[in-house]
Image 1: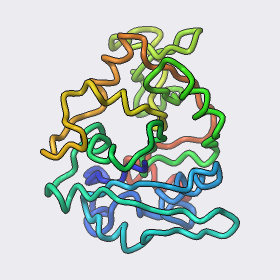
Image 2 (image 1 turned 60 degrees about the horizontal axis):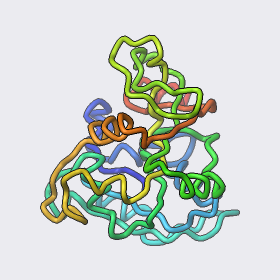
Image 3 (image 1 turned 90 degrees about the horizontal axis):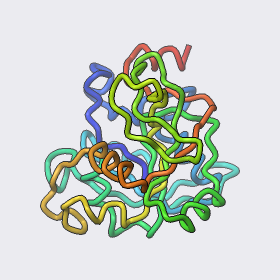
Length: 236
């Protein structure tokens, strides 16, 4: 699943007429980088959620992508904007799309640039065989998030540490593997027919406290393209 429903407020005015995931980075739409990386790993059934200007994402990619040197990708959509008039936040959007997703699935934000990341089938298989319900890729804290999001134990457990903790030295890259069971305890009905908006952080932190979230560090190039300045740096 490629997350592409956000408004991109901090990117205005660039996002007034174009959804942020379609902004160009090094010659192609930002969200196309993870989509192609998924295809390179053999993940050729991809789902995109949309809200703000979602019709432009559908118009750009259609229902099938055929990039040179990559397998054909079949695209499905979850149009939160059309269905509910707004984005459902990350967890709400994922639950909305669950009926179209496999039992174990990747999620990546369409506004994060991580060109070196490898979506490996072996990683999915290892996670599927584990007792965890989520597996996160974390990056060293960037300048815009020096306080970090989480910690990571020596055994690969993601730790829900209080703000200001010494070990809270990692930031969530947005790239993750989930099992459908992760979302079973969030209080939302399957498929989220009511269109409830729900952030991802609270259920993630609750699952960490129960020892259900594993993780690892991704050391490759990574940028949360959250401001026009970061976009300009990537394209400089």
